[in-house]
Image (cartoon, rainbow, N blue to C red; front, side):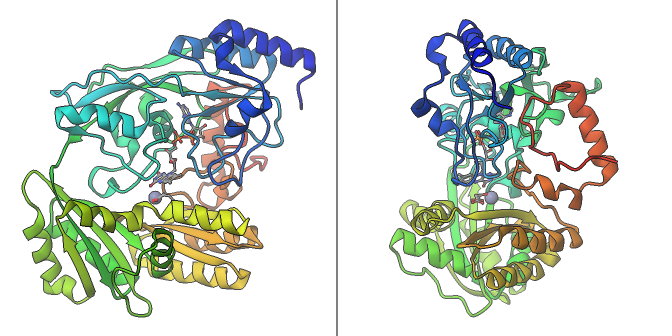
Length: 472
Ligand code: FAD
Ligand code: MLT
Ligand code: ZN
């Protein structure tokens, strides 16, 4: 329901009282960038964008929105890929709560290996700040310059370092958040151990803005590893990629990334970068990008593991380097893939259709084959790549005509293989209707009960994580 003009004006006036006029955006051109997602596929109008500057201001804003019955979509860097960071077209009385001003970064504690950051601080800003202490952030991905720590917690983001350090939820030593009624919950003490009932970091990581607004995070850090070696390896196929990943994880303790690039993806990104293919693969082959990082030079470990008979059997060719410029070039083949896909989609005029799935490693080859068949049946182009150690493949469909049919085919196959329909991007709006494929009615009822307890008016990110089917 759209708000009446009187209700809209009254809410805006109260929001201005709470955070100050410069931080309540109501003009069309000021709101526009907050109303459309990164892919251009999702979005809708909002009544206002509000940019609180502190936890207390967030605690003032949420009860106001509840009083007027306005939905609240929390937005960090707006790099989410499942439509959860932007208003729904069907809920125009929505306030976008931007965390942009919650971007303070505290002093890192080099003994505890922790830092307290505002939810709106970007990954890159935190990484740059802690570098002086020889510390680093354990989560990294290509959207690092815009994606926020709060957004990464809310989506339980993954990225390239999961193989070494795990997903974002493993790095939240403490959290402060505001519930729909304005209650402030959580702690930033960063205690490595505490068993005292409900654990807010566990509850909020991956909740995609449906349970509360995360305002501050006590983030775990890792050492900086100054010595790096990078390899681009051409292998005989996806099973070979999985075999290589397993062997390297056993033989090379400094493995920091094991990334999958299928030939269609390599062709697209090299075209985008104006380069030629760095290595040839045979039909059915794949590429694996390997990054090692350590306190001592990891090159010998890496080269001897690549020469090991157990891996040599699947390797077709390899480029290995420790040279900074050459490493950067190799890594760009993986890091700039999402950008290359977006550029292609923008040139063709049809937004990319993204699936982010994971299956047990021994089912990966079969799943990608089903995904390719679904593309061919639709007349679409498939660009597959991902994080090989986790069986996580990003299936990017370009020039689609029937995305529902593609999703039905692929996501059903994923569920049948014992996999997940969202490995790291979240469920958002995009995958909500497919949630019953991987969550039972009992599980969905339990999730709904938690959500109803924390947000009885269901104002926080409506539609996200919600299959929209009445729960029997
Ligand atoms: P937004 O997009 O603003 O929001 C995402 C979701 O989190 C929304 O549901 C929103 O409501 C909620 N949210 C945001 N902030 C808060 C908060 N403070 N409190 C409560 N809820 C909040 N993701 C990966 O996991 N791995 C990757 O490798 C990866 N690579 C990417 C590469 C590119 C080029 C792009 C564009 C995206 C990539 N992503 C990846 C997806 C995206 O960057 C992540 O999901 C990221 O964590 C989103 O952060 P954000 O600040 O942009 O959040
Ligand atoms: C990645 O691994 O690069 C991301 O998850 C982004 C994407 O899927 O496009
Ligand atoms: Zn990814």
